Amino acid sequence: MKIIFHGHSCLELQLKEDTLFIDPFITGNPSAKITKDDIKKCDYIILTHGHADHYGDTDFLAKKFDATVLATFELAVYIAKKGIKTHELNLGGGFNFPFGRVKLTLAHHSSSTPDGTYVGEPAGVVVTADEKTIYHAGDTSLFEGMKIIGDTNKIDYAFLPIGDNYTMGIDDAVKATELLNPEYVVPVHYNTFDLIKADVEQFKRKVESIGKKCLIVKPGESIDC
Ligand code: NI
Ligand code: MN
Image (cartoon, helix red, strand yellow):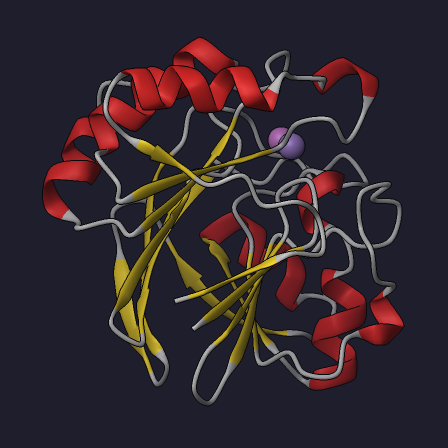
């Protein structure tokens, strides 16, 4: 699997057969090193919630590539009305797709679409494919249930927001790393905008002080695993 970080919370997972995007916020994302037109393959899109900095280019990519959008029930219904293929899931529910398994987990945040439509609960997501397990927390506060997510999944890479203001800040994300116990934590959702500036080196030092490994991936960089 190759995981490309496009800045903010946007991940591109290049699997053996399929390419998945999680929260495909490219247009309007000041950290992105590509434009939406640079994307050559997109089979599935996973949305953690409806906010514009996550929903991003979902409509464009889904229509261009005839991709299927995976989202919580209310968000999937909203998207399906645009003539886009969807697969609805809900919190705690997983499904075995041709490429691997996707399970939605709790996230404590809110969820409305760019046009202001309220679309139910936000989610985190566990993707297991090509013998690797990725956890993308979505936008969330710290919560005790992260311990259960860590106990029930052997997480290789946990992508956690550290930018504060809208989500966990550094100290809460360090605590989350302890609860989730991933092989590596990768900080996301910081420095995209002034409101979410964070000292990522400080996060890394704090993670290492509890005996965990932190991988800082810059926008445009990737992880081969
Ligand atoms: Ni949000
Ligand atoms: Mn966000």
